[in-house]
Amino acid sequence: MSRKRSYPEFGARSDRIVDRVNTVLLCLVLVLTVYPLYFMLIASFSSIQAIYAGKVILLPSEPTLKGYQKIFSDSSIWQGYLNAVVYTVAGTAVNVILTVPLAFILSRREMPGCGILMKLFVFTMYFYGGIIPTYLVVKQVGILDSMWSLILPTAIATYNMIIARSFFINSIPEELKEAAFLDGCGYTRFFIHVALPLSGAIIAIMVLFYGATHWNDYFNAMIYLNTPSKFPLQMVLRNILISNQMASSMGEDATTVAESTQLIDLLKYGCVIVSSIPMLVIYPFIQKYFVKGVMIGAVKG
Image (cartoon, rainbow, N blue to C red):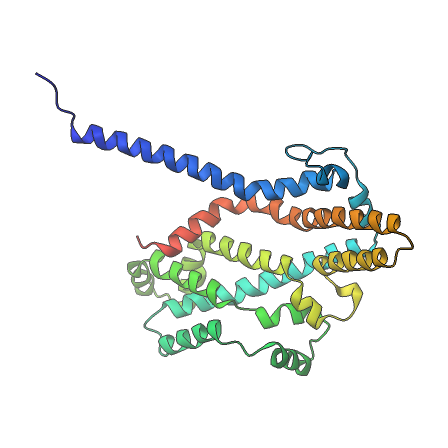
């Protein structure tokens, strides 16, 4: 008599098949995501002729450092690096110091006016005052052409605040608050001594989100900063590209223009790598907090 296949065995096999399919799909997504950045890395060390010929696939071809030599020959890049680090560290500190307490306050539904305040914050996600009114406000406040013009107008991102608020609602048990209040805690002491020590994951997420935004920001610097010595790295790299493009367009003959155009292509690859390295170095150290914080802030329980 033939033996019937049990349902648990069939379910286990189907689960293994699903796992393998998911693994293959995720590997394909990983390759599609990582390879463009890897290609820029190897292309920045390759000659532009080899890139045009399609020789640069997995390893650099005809290695050269012309692009990086041109980038780092500009002394302003080191000042740009320093400015970018200062703006990122100071801006992220201000963002986290303001966002996390605000998210905690808005997560306490018993607070009077909490719902109205939340609706006002959400309103700002969909309706923006515009560049010109914001510029006029920054100018009248007196922070134009200063570090604070890149920090204070974006001190709180509503989307990040909503993520932090969801974390506090779903991850800080109400019973814990009641127990703390029975021991004589107020909201301030509960936040500092109880909620904050349990919020390492969401703080790491806020640092990552805000830090990446400040590091990659060049638009606000282009609007609010006028002094070249105050430009962040992204603005310095942009100016290097523009100056070389202008020099190539003023070449005396076709050969000079072609060589300048090739150098500009190398500069583009090099600029992407130079500006991405700090984030790529920092991200692995906070990746576990990133995954944990997003999931805890999104799923209850």
